[in-house]
Length: 71
Image (cartoon, rainbow, N blue to C red; front, top):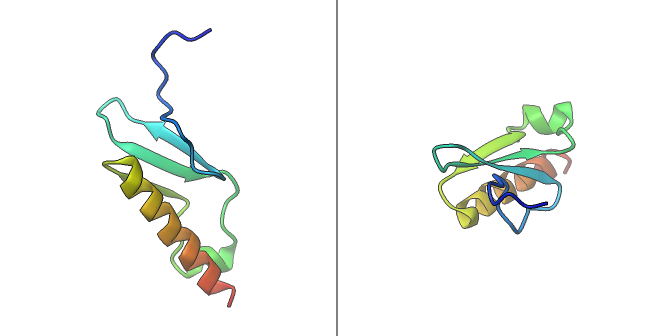
């Protein structure tokens, strides 16, 4: 059943949960936490943005930071 009040925008970002705050801010939280090494390198598990495109870019920045930590 759809009550029309979903707070999860579509489409989703694979591997991340997306939340729309009551103030209209988008948040994304990584489903699987980063490793300690990735976290220490600066990868953040939860990020926010004003638009879905900006949120996607921020998620990619975090994933890139995590990949660099493993290099």
